[in-house]
Amino acid sequence: MHMPLCSRCHKNVAVVFISKMEEGSTSNEGYCLKCAKELGLKPIDGLMRQMGITEDDLDQITDEMTNMHSLMNTENDDAEDEEIKIVRTKRFGMKPMYPEDACIQMELSGHDFFVFRNAENDEVNVVYKRKGHTYGLIEPEC
Image (cartoon, rainbow, N blue to C red; front, side):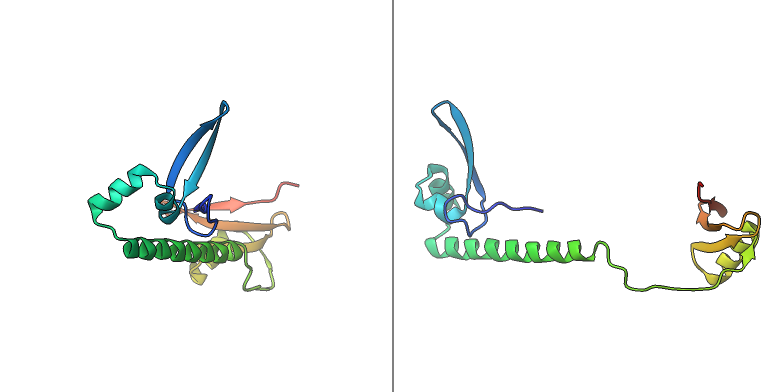
């Protein structure tokens, strides 16, 4: 999830968003709580008073939001790095067999699919488990 940074300080997470109209065009800006307070945005002052948030609380909230933003970006970077990562290559001999025999071998191996060389056409095929204790066959289109 992308969280925008403050339009003013460019280091804290923007949590207050406003739309400005200047000379007939609209611009959207986002501010962190600290910058919004410093800019004197009235709703922020009122909310802080109602909630009993002090200047120290504001600093702590801003720091926690920034830390959370950094942590989320680190987790997203890790997830992107891990999306496509081959960690193991398996090689095995494939003697020709019929699809029904491949299903039996798949059941014996405990896997949900089985790659084999089809004895009927000498092509590499895959059998796989389907719902209702049925099987599927994948054949290449050549």
